[in-house]
Amino acid sequence: MSSPAAARFDRGHTDDLMTFLAASPSQYHAVANAAERLEKAGFRQLAETDAWDASTGGKFVLRGGAIIAWYVPEGAAAHTPFRIIGAHTDSPNLRVKPLPDTGAQGWRQIAVEIYGGTLLNTWLDRDLGLAGRLTLLDGTERLVNIDRALMRVPQLAVHLDRSVNSDGLKLDKQRHMQPIWGLGDVHEGDLIAFLEDEEELERGSVAGWDLMVHSIEPPAYLGRDRELLAGPRMDNLLSVHAAVAALVAASAGDTLDHIPVLAAFDHEENGSQSDTGADGPLLGNVLERSVFSRGGSYEDRARAFAGAICLSSDTGHAVHPNYAERHDPTHHPRANGGPILKVNVNQRYATDGSGRAVFVSACERAGVPWQTFVSNNSMPCGTTIGPITAARHGIQTVDIGVAILSMHSARELCGADDPYLLANVMLAFLEN
Image (cartoon, rainbow, N blue to C red):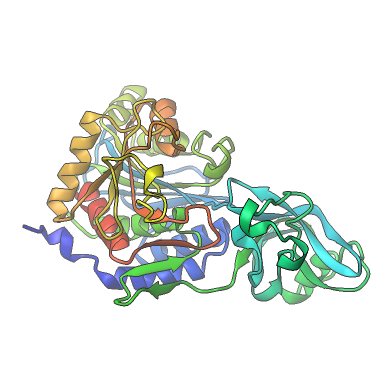
């Protein structure tokens, strides 16, 4: 029987996810959109350079492409434990290089570097936009989103690569992935000057940039019965969106005996080792400051961390109908089958038996079905922020997520019901 939490999110949540994905072409846009949703729910932003007080209510910290948000209920003691949902904001893509203006043979191109383990071929022959952040000479930052057909990475015609369909497509990351954005001679500074004009900034005012390519095709329902969802950056903005919704809903309750937390990090796709990554100090600093601002001691901090639990939410692999042999023969997660519990005994995922009990209990309270993912022994799996969070902070961590196809593609695919099923489990976890 479904709990009250199960009715909180329905297909409207998936509609809202589509809006969130379209509005978040970079991790910087994603955290800005998450912050806006939190502010509307009464959360307030804290500066890391300010002194923090013991006030209750919702709070959040932004740093680059990362956001940490938490809600302190009335009567929370300094040693009150944390319930954390971890996720990441970055996705594999093409990132603009420091000297972006390049070209050959009369074509103007943009020099890009490959970020993360992206499926290169999925960026070919797509209409591409450009997004990210600009840093001005005065130190201020400006989000930019050119959400129109600006660039394209053209594939070589089959007439000039007769073996492509028999021997497979072979792409050189340096020579074959530079997008075209016009004709004519190459002039240093053209791209940034173009962005300054687009943003109505004074020429020469941009001192730095973190820019990336994105597909401008919007998210869409797919299938005869619209039971599937296709869209960009679901790894892992699907989890970020669900966690924001769950945190907002949990903060509206009045029976919390713990502090619910959202931790959405940058740089998961290349190892998490940065000041905004899960392997950096950001989460630990925020949690400790929350304890100390409420008058806590180191003993209180140790108690709060020892009682903490983290759900590390990231996408996993749904069984592929054309490549079923690549999956474990007894573990075949299916679209719309509910969230997945991710297990790897070599600690690529942090789940153990007690963590499984935490997840199953949340699913039962939410009235949501669930599945298990484990890799084929012949194909070692990737990893998540889960083991990093567990090892760095000594916090019990459980790896979960949603099963998708085309992971790390410019456009991924999941069941249209799974995003709101995940959000309901997250809410049940945060409310207990």
